[in-house]
Image (tube, rainbow, N blue to C red):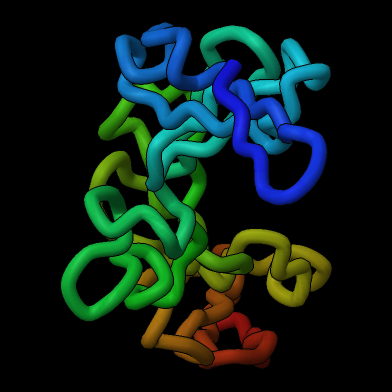
Length: 175
């Protein structure tokens, strides 16, 4: 290593990153936290942002969460996260750095739906899990399953009875 002497004992310096191209060959940054000549094998390869990961004395395995706010080239572009901007949750199913474009937007419960690489078209069927009609022997129907359209489900009486009510059980009569 190189040394510097200033009115005393020389301090030898050994930057191990200057001795290897392993990190740069992998598109990573080499960092040697302690360049004292006696401090060996403590250098690290660190993944370049927006990827994350590091490894001591060898190439790192990098991860890429396309939903992370720091990933300017991924799902978070322009005015913000595509999914969050639509009131949805972003999920990156495979964090391997070489797998991109697999992020999905998932609708917020109780709405359902998902889409890969774009905001999802969400649906909200208010009859799902709604036992009000069924408990009275009636049929539930939600004509508009848009999450913005709520309290518009109807209960319809079973034949031979007649009767329909919106957002509540129907009063059934025999015609």
